[in-house]
Image (cartoon, rainbow, N blue to C red; front, top):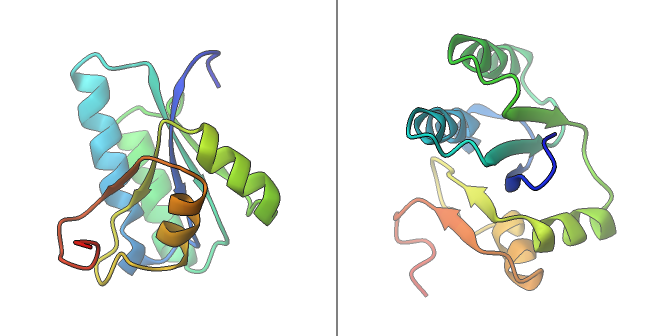
Length: 122
């Protein structure tokens, strides 16, 4: 990872309804707009091999291998610190975005980027 990078963190298991592919699309657009100070970090369990492979192919397709990182799940205390230190935590779920990740990121004081789906309007 580049020193001084702004981390966009997407914690959670790799599952199609969690839509990590949208985060890769966002990262692609950021790079196209010369916002190369950002990196995207995924952390979580590989729940779906086919979806995980799709994500890896997207990274290759957009030549984002120096901007997108896949890491294993992180212990809760370390994840809390990473959420707090990240530029933003992403939650782009297909269904409700009001879940454990969003609540934990809020408690960590994170800036959260999510889908305007009504689930987080409060």
